[in-house]
Image (tube, rainbow, N blue to C red; front, side, top):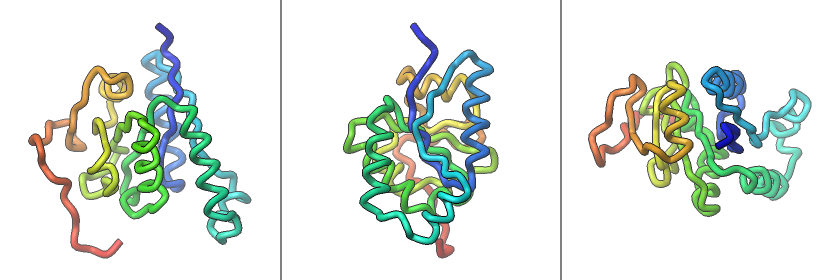
Length: 164
């Protein structure tokens, strides 16, 4: 069996370095990730931020890139829950029948989990290569806290009262 997997990594673009960190973490375990997510160059990111790319165009591009992947990995960092595009990607992944795995970035908390992940996530793990690989492969479906401890079955995700 090949250790190469096609995934779509849903993330807040400020966390691009964590995308690289995750692929390197898994590579050290002999696991090659081919990521189809969008990582915008500064000029393109500026066009996105200014709203110069039509929403329908971006959705079509994301759908095409996601359809190629077997699994959608959601990087969960401090602002992930505030990103409407991350919630859209999770919902679309569910519609496309993709496995959805959440991975806490270093410093990520349960308060950072996107709402759509609470509805559609298949597994939620900490920054641990063996656990991430098992979750991507579907060998294990844990729901963990950021420290790697088990979450009680059916536990709701905490939500802070602060405005997003």
